[in-house]
Length: 339
Image (tube, rainbow, N blue to C red):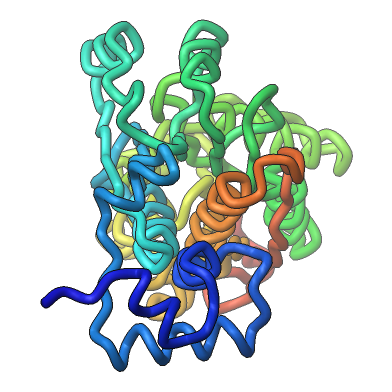
């Protein structure tokens, strides 16, 4: 015969509601009692019924996750970390990959997540109409991209401060011909490339360095794009002695282009990335480290907290720490090189 929640409650000497709260990790149960209930449930072989829990709580135990590009490293890393948190709490993930304008328009027109999810983690930046559509779901909302947004819990970083530290590092080394590989053709409405570009321009201005449009190129936030962009920069009449890439993947592409042109790093050209990709240390890349997985996990935890404590209020903007990691791809420019 199957074991019921009442059997567990009777064996543990508590109420069925206490068993339910303990096994779902909800507040109101002491650690000692929760441990006892968990042990009794395991001893009896009790497994909570998803359908019964859904009927009792009104929840679907499913979290909707909306991404612009599921195959890109940043989004995949955030998604993987968030899914681990959701899974550990007993929730499934319903994934929507909105990689094209047509798919995105269809999603926000039909809103297929309605009544199917308890919360939504959005890894794209919605416009005003899309934001309103998500808010109309009446469920907790969170994101790891963009700035503060009404109705959303935002877990992110200070893109401006990170870019400033990277470009200022190159300025302090003595570089004056500083190029940038950006991601202007990235996901729709993505503000990160804009914020990082403005920070780049501001640091140059503060250092008294005139901006040269020929030292900017679009790398599409991919390794291949970074390689193309670096090749474009090298074709300038006065190529850069240093390059800031808005992502590590573009920086790795830049390194490949420099190698193919038989240029050495950092003797001929210094390169700084952004992210601290898992392969950044392997290639010795100087970069701005951000906790990509940490942002996904924290956003997931905050969504679950809102579900378990609906009266606790919605967190606003949570800013995660960043730091400049110095490795082998940056050095002062050669005295004979263009400045």
